[in-house]
Image (cartoon, rainbow, N blue to C red; front, side, top):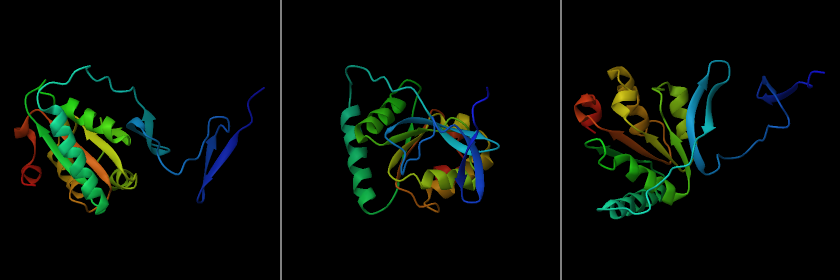
Length: 182
């Protein structure tokens, strides 16, 4: 026997759902997520594997992490987002720094691994509330200059948000002039 179909209503649209697995939340709970897209249902967040941090941190990573956290918290009180551009050689600790800060803040962490750039995507990120959004290897994911430039409206605050944005890059020369002039 086939399971009974259930429907979830959102505005004037009805979506097929399985009542056993459907839960409605007011906000995205703390955790690590990747962004995905389904042509029939739109953007979604998929639970990702937890970050594995090394048992000991070297250099000035802890102090840099603390500085970013303090800056983000202060700007959050003003209702502003914060952007951090991390650039340097591969293996230099850029992504590790972003992960440390994200874990310390205890907020939802969004990993952007595809070149989503439309206004709906930016609105969804802006509407998340306090969270950490990591664009790792940004220049590789957003290879096209036009896609990099469309992200400026998110980074410049046209889509007001409470996010901490990490733009992590290895090759600074692959960023557009519009991004490097910020």
